[in-house]
Image (cartoon, rainbow, N blue to C red):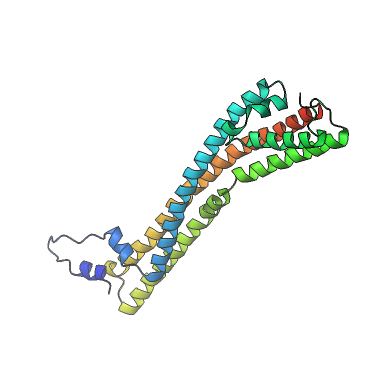
Length: 240
């Protein structure tokens, strides 16, 4: 009989207070498989929040720098003029990196001659370069999001495994002790349900954050695709 079962069985009748089960003590005295499940889920939960904060900062900086860069791009008289201003202050903007790829390729094809229009083949080549750069930026923005999806989809099932094992252990205790009273089954069922609760604590924020970030990245991806074509079009016209 576990220490918690012993405590419950020692409760005196006639108004004596029944000892309460402490969740922390239940976790500390849980069976090894349930402990392993809880440890994995706690690590998942911590990792989930680290990724959420890092990705939130990443997307916030990307949006802020991109808004400022797009204003500079729209106001620039030419691609060369924008490039000469420097892109260091827009380091966090994926749009600035797409522009840099397209501009560098335009300069290479024209050998640095100002205002030289690109022929059809060269124009298609620059467009391909900018679209590939946009795709690479989308992949970069989506980095670590798959981890959130994995945690959100697997954490409940890992918690469910701990629950099933705990309940199975409770039934084994009933069979071994030939007793189905509450002190025998309560601690094991309680520790099993704790595993389920921790699984949900890890999964719910992961799913919510994944959906939020996916929507934000999707919005940026649509604009980046159009921007890549815009850069290529201006490059075809000689960078005007």
